[in-house]
Length: 206
Image (cartoon, rainbow, N blue to C red; front, side):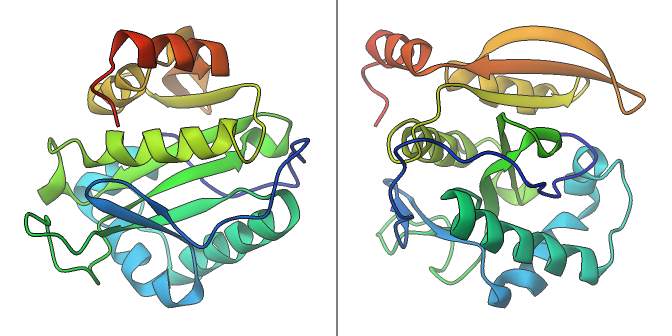
């Protein structure tokens, strides 16, 4: 991803409704970031494989993880969107116990401006299982539906092809490749119309 997920003063989508308590998919529960998630999020974000792209391989302090949680709480309260913690559903084929935090997904205002940026990450042991893509579909639907977004962007370091593939699997369209914060970065975008077209082409997506 990029080198920071700190939220700025950001956007106020038109016509949004209050945030729901949770989003659900076939295998996941998505819960808005809360103070009790800080320790587990810090462990996720300091995992060597996760921090490689998310934090340019830096080990962030716990205080930074706590600040990101506080900022997400603020953006949910003020703007109706933020970051969600990913937990397994209580189903027979669940990937892990229901109280285990697997990853995160959601939106922050890009550069503190007027574009919602999609962010995501998951513990390495769950890579390749489609869970991040599943979570992204849930938050994208929520963004276009409840929040009223007209455009979503995402960015990642060009070598992070796993992240690029997630963007492509949810229908995002390549926009640009340029140096960003000193790194070779690709940018993708998604509109409600492009997302509807993507769902028509892939009716198996739930």
